[in-house]
Length: 180
Ligand code: SF4
Ligand code: SF4
Image (spheres, rainbow, N blue to C red):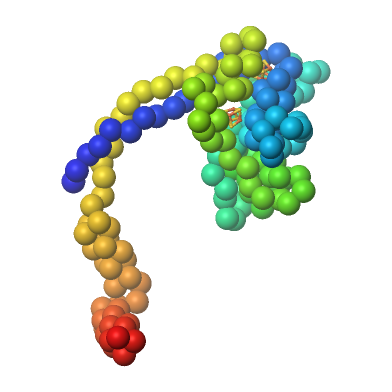
């Protein structure tokens, strides 16, 4: 299998340094406004700060991939005597909640690391350095096109049986020929 180099960007979150100012939410929503910087609305931010001042809880959480369905069960964490709400650290826009969704359309939001910018803006605007960008290179395995085809065919055969897959291919090739 071939390999290629991939750039991995990580935002290291030091929650002990976060003071809950929410500047990260403001700049993220302004950067992603249409047109850029025309408005701001923390509800549209791709980073959201879990904020419970009475319990001294300030934890930034970043929007990740959208989940098509909710998990079969939910998790509740207790850390150092502090209990966090269900799914508190989950990064997914999920059918079970409103987090990380456009307030008007309900469309999922996802952090894109401020594509096109040299440094993510939430990192730039965080004056306490609770957010720090780390960039590294990783060697990753690349699946060749033929391999992908083989894997796809093998999974179809496993699911439907060899004969059905062969019949479907024969039908498709006959209909392609009749179009010529
Ligand atoms: S800008 Fe920094 S200190 Fe302020 S809420 Fe965001 S992470 Fe916390
Ligand atoms: S990296 Fe950019 S897109 Fe992601 S949360 Fe920070 S400001 Fe928003």
